[in-house]
Length: 92
Image (cartoon, rainbow, N blue to C red; front, top):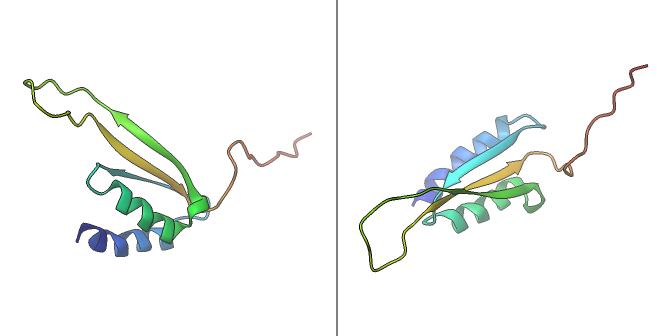
């Protein structure tokens, strides 16, 4: 349901995003894989630039299961441009 709700919003975001624009989506483990597939369909797999892990500490009582200690940022660009590609200035 969440992915279906997100799709038209991301499609509109893609439509209005500048050709040189970039997009970061913050998500947690519940929707990470599903959102990545949806974003690959909308932006294209080659427009995926990076998965950024936001790690944080949580001080809670001891538990019998692992604690969730990170979220994910998915980074996409509208145009495919290798890192480090810059326009050359023709200044004399």
